[in-house]
Image 1 (cartoon, rainbow, N blue to C red):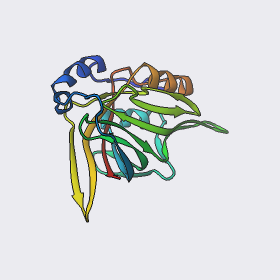
Image 2: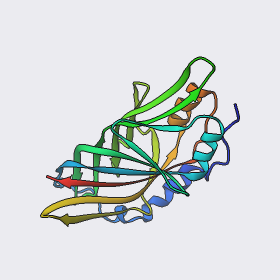
Image 3: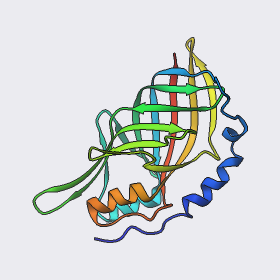
Image 4: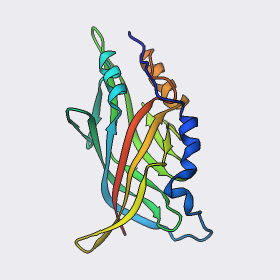
Length: 204
């Protein structure tokens, strides 16, 4: 099987720049108000170069219900429903609980090799990071995140308030590459871009 190459600069480098982002200017204060989240949507845009390499290695991604997948001329997009979580508007941090997931699938002569990534607990700007179950084995910080270009905001629609966080960048790290390599014997390098995600969830 062809190796997956052409990674981006190491995630540690871009993560070091995250201190410049909007999130960094609002410290997590003691007693910061935390709001519970209702339903919403997380929209992932997978990195085009890495997705092409996965397809070239015959390891395409598929949605795990109720997630959905769409193709455009420039990207593969996944949407996962948000079922709940918490968000602190004052500390600009929280966790989004997602339904469904993503599966990488490699067809063999008589069977399929599958890596299911489900049970997403997307920690944004907190100590937990993205906690994901890979074939049932949960790991925290499955991806590294970079918030440098992200914009958190509160929007109002039809009388309801929503938290919106745009363009959270995700990168493969040692945990995610070990899971992929264990399943398929090939992997993108740590620091390669997985994609970006935008969250939109109702505040209760």
